[in-house]
Image 1 (tube, rainbow, N blue to C red):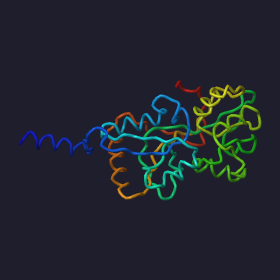
Image 2 (cartoon, one colour; image 1 turned 135 degrees about the vertical axis):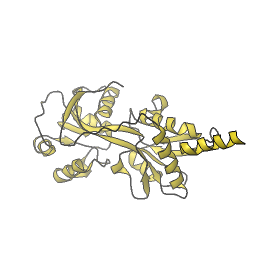
Image 3 (cartoon, rainbow, N blue to C red; image 1 turned 30 degrees about the vertical axis):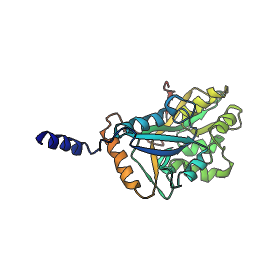
Image 4 (cartoon, rainbow, N blue to C red; image 1 turned 180 degrees about the vertical axis):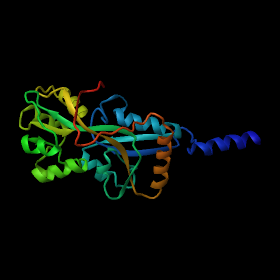
Length: 251
């Protein structure tokens, strides 16, 4: 009896229920956003793999359905989906609740290899260069404000592949994106003319957007508890108006 009470206390202290393997399935909608999320990559990409690894100790099986980004956000509201992932916090729509960070991406500037950027503020970029962006993304606040100021958001690219193509073709000078995604996409499409040196504006968390269906709050607490038990979460973040150039990290 003493042994049972001790074991039960340990479970309570961890804040995580120990469930039998495959006791529950979470169905999520996801965009094709390699290397973070993709139906063609091992483990479905870095971010999806991270989420699977976090959920595994609780016996939760993750079922991922890939589709275009705006469709993923729409479909995830239906009753048979848990939510959508990965998303920047700015991309969590009304009717959804964000988890704590599951993984991290970067927001930055990718550029043509035949130009030299000279700028100190975001406004300099928008004043002096042709800026490409994905119209379906919701960028961090200051970037989104500048896009609204200088462009019709509907004139942005449909997705990352289109953005990579217009940058490689010279129709824009720079692209606002996660540079890791841009360079991965450029290699995938065999595109030339995109510089391997990137400028990182900030790190941005990738969260699971839970659809606010009955019982979602318990799932949200469980995931956040599991994330709190994980010791490898990055916490650093850069200032948006302090650009930093670096070579692309290895995959």
